[in-house]
Image (cartoon, rainbow, N blue to C red):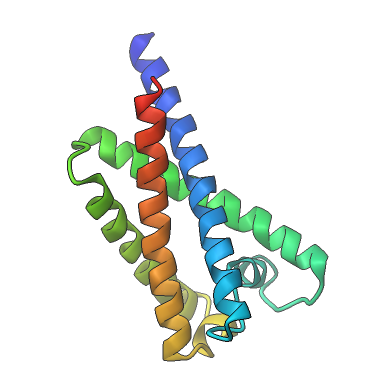
Length: 152
């Protein structure tokens, strides 16, 4: 029973951390878009993956945000379970590396597997913006997991 409770807590913590990471990424991307660094932000990418095409409007953005929150929740759970299996030492470094790995994996899957124009048409600057967004995601989930761990 105790083991099941610990896993449940880790899953819930991972979901919370993943959602916080997604929100941090979306705020960061919105600032990057306002500064003219990129035209496409995470909600647009998530919507393009869900619809396999680009729909304008706020409904598509809301669905894209929901999709991004869901996917990043799964990534948050994966990271929480990885940290559970290892140690919490160097948590921020591990988070940054995890974020970089996700960035690379999603770029490869988006371009090679799905052949989504939202990925194939991006510039090196866009890729760099998303790279730093991946690092921000990893740092955010590490921070939130540490906060949640300290509260138990």
